Length: 265
Length: 331
Ligand SMILES: Cc1cc2nc3c(=O)[nH]c(=O)nc-3n(C[C@H](O)[C@H](O)[C@H](O)COP(=O)(O)OP(=O)(O)OC[C@H]3O[C@@H](n4cnc5c(N)ncnc54)[C@H](O)[C@@H]3O)c2cc1C
Ligand SMILES: Nc1ncnc2c1ncn2[C@@H]1O[C@H](COP(=O)(O)O)[C@@H](O)[C@H]1O
Image (cartoon, rainbow over all chains, first blue to last red; front, side):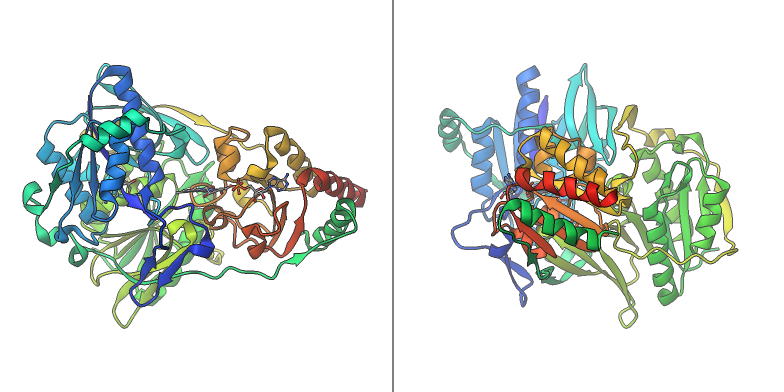
């Protein structure tokens, strides 16, 4: 199995709201100092899923990331987890691409690599939360796609995917090559071993630009974005919270009950 | 003949129009009056006469009903095919669908095929008449931010809409709409994935999204037994239970009751959050609840910032008292 995994560096989604600020003039998030970006958690699941398939039946895992900031760091992490190879897609022409532009870059890269059976993505990047790039890559490559998988099985060249749905789950069968996006229900992501970290540090990670993968500059970057960000701001949801107290928890609870009963529909 | 139109992707639940579809029709109707467009509805699968009448009374001008058995159950491949064929024929200015299993799945696919603009999980879609464009607002960064996007004029927009963000249309009794049957099924070559089985976690009683009272538990409950306790509270209040991601990941509760960005979007009259820290990804799914009550042992928990009533305590010591007192008051 030749598996390609797409990963993206994101501002840590667990960053508490109090530390999250936006530059309203530039419409950009101001990353707090000293807080590094992380591999988007769903993308880490995609790497994990690839490793499990490889362990079960052998194969090679190639990781792709398009970006400049922290691309190297998250790539090393994926390699340390056990991925075989990586390519960083980095070019001024790719910067500030929207989902279509990013999918275009990734699909072109897959075409350049040529040989692949399975592409894995996260269900959504935990920064903009769009959840479109996987499906778009599949459309550009004209291959089947299943989104939000919780498990992947490969049997005699047929993929069996259980994916989550609003009220349960569904199982699909599809042929290869295919693209699958992973959801958190897949389980735990492994922590790289010391040996993994050492061998990852030794690996060469090539950087490819627009000319290497043959992308048309009119289809990538900020200028190609279809819908444009015009405003980014922090919504204010705060309410005035009345704290209920009492001489002991039981009394406080009794008071809270009265207040709940008063507002209960 | 094509006229300017907005196309709503309808969803059917037990033979009737789903709540999200009524919300979309409300939004589409308001936009269409500004844009000067008609409202078309695409639905597939079995539909009752009542639901067709609902659609008309909620403001639909033309209902496209795909009746081929190939559309009998949701298939991303088949529905993407259906949507693209219809869009080519009626040339809508805007496609609206829910941020649901269906919308998440087909919106990017049809946008790619039609070269359309795309915006997911919108909480608002406005029309700007000066520029003749649609403007979308959507949460980002797990709900910590809101982002506004402008779309290019004259290009089809495919937008998915978050549940409970558009006001359902007012019904106009006796209003009529035109019904067009789509008899052709999907092109077999378009079907690349085969559905082999479906597991539905049936909720007993009231659906989470429609409940007036929700008692939600988080990681602070510490175990599945914790949920037995808050279930008792929910029952006493006539409500249902919900959860954050943590209890779902721990397998204390099923995924179907997760609330938040990747779970369900709820806005009950009363939301009681117990042992929930108030992470952005959770808040984004419940912040529009009318009244929010929080019980948490940490006085600095973020959940208190968005609550109306708060109690700092170990839930184990206070929830049994709440249950007791509420049962008492009901006698
Ligand atoms: C991309 C992404 C998407 C996500 N989507 C969702 C989503 O849709 N929904 C969701 O909920 N989360 C989601 N999350 C996870 C989210 O970020 C938080 O991790 C999660 O909401 C935290 O759940 P919690 O508050 O229950 O648990 P914790 O953060 O563990 O908080 C537990 C709280 O309980 C309190 N507590 C502990 N013991 C007691 C006690 N005995 N009595 C009273 N209080 C007690 C603690 O003080 C604490 O405040 C997502 C995360 C990411 C990265
Ligand atoms: N810049 C990127 N580089 C590599 N993969 C990406 C990038 N952006 C998005 N992806 C992949 O596409 C998935 C969905 O992203 P999105 O549509 O932006 O939410 C992510 O989880 C990644 O797997």
